[in-house]
Image (cartoon, rainbow, N blue to C red; front, side):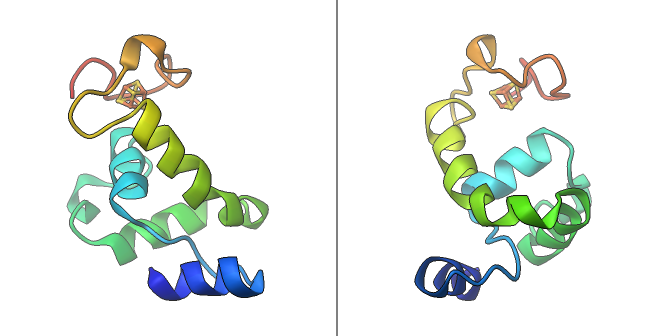
Length: 94
Ligand code: SF4
């Protein structure tokens, strides 16, 4: 995770997605990675790399961290205001 962030932020090199707590939570709430990978960020990263086009990898961390803080928070997700609510399998269940 740290290596991905350093490469991305310091050198503009994008070789993966840093799966922190926000990215991991959002990936699993949206069922973009199977539940069996919930405690394995490296496997979650591989799932996301297969799903998301490479041109989006750079922005996932910044955008998903903000989304995780402002909308899809760990303790009180704001599903009623979430733009993903109509496609999210976890809407109203967290
Ligand atoms: S609908 Fe709720 S659980 Fe799903 S992504 Fe939005 S805030 Fe998160």
